[in-house]
Image (cartoon, rainbow, N blue to C red; front, top):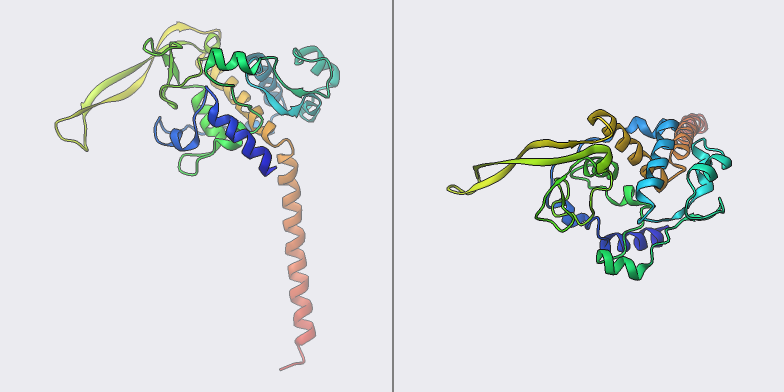
Length: 260
């Protein structure tokens, strides 16, 4: 597992859409809190899987995730084959893409990173979890004609990845105002003051935020599909150890009660 995570993180650092944890921590806005209740909502995870396959799996692979594992979130094999499998015919295959690495380097400057454990790799103790970052990142795009892709991102300034969900969210511009720099008298800084909607998307703001939360919930689940089972098992293990501790304590007292 450590080797797997290290490999994916290396790919992640070379990707065009995201930067290293150290770089990301040095700039961008504060992260919003991802609604964790989505992780326990089967419908949200299923919708997130649909969004992932339709909008992310075109360029980004999830090479350590198999389609048949989606049965764990309530989908049948027939549903998986009919609605979520576009790049392969075997439900036991991993979520790979047909994008040629050489073409990817020529078109994008690098191979888009694998997303299997992206939510786990983006955690920052000072800002929040990887899910918090992704939830903020996917909701912070705005139009910027000075960039090659025409897009920028408040959570990741000068991002290389374009806004793949723009049709859902619509197009926005960012509003900045000049204010005096509190740390450098006589100088001014550009302060972000919100977004201005340029064109509407197919979803309202609330609907889009909810869709992004579903997608992030799926990405979080995909990084460790057995996470909820591990949590539940952990509770029972702790209860068992607590009971065992009490029994051991009382036995110890009984064995030594006549020894002064």
